Image (cartoon, rainbow, N blue to C red; front, side, top):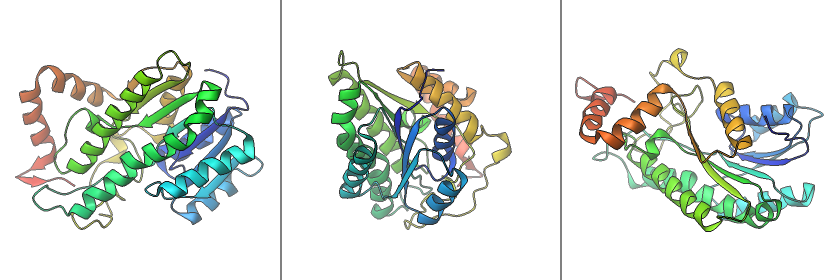
Length: 268
């Protein structure tokens, strides 16, 4: 593991799931961690759980550019720079294309794609100066369009393409750009996923006992950052999905259909 002592790490969406696990593990490694989220109560709880640590929190909705700019400016005012930016804030959805509202699709894109653009643009000068690392938390849905999750897949495809273009532009600069793709991971993203009417769907039928924990996922992400990997795809199912979709796309269509539909009904 690389030495993150006194490194300034910015993590969006750090009050839940993978983001919270990343915050706690980076703090344990001696980093100065700044994180943001939309829920003030969860941010307050995170602070209370990490009293005495180098932790800065701010209530931010990454769908709003001005709030992202203010957040990154506050971090730099406090600590003087940014070494690592992890664009983790995200939201999913559960609805068929024939039923979903444009509002749902727009909300997902605003948070998952534009939120990453806003925070990265705001942090870029500082990260270039530090020759740091920019990370996008993407998804297998960024490699394979998933039924019932069309807007989510679109946002992650956009994220991967944008980061790949940015990495190419920064080739030779010393600044590293990468994306990581967790598989099914225990987190709140399924419960908070938007339904066809842009409302949180609530309880999910997915079996979390069979999923990778947020803590294990965060550990893999941190190791990949330390090694400056090009990208990271987690879990056997995730790796298999990417492989199948690349080399056997028609078969992947059939497998995806049978995974996400039972008796002709979408599994949400």
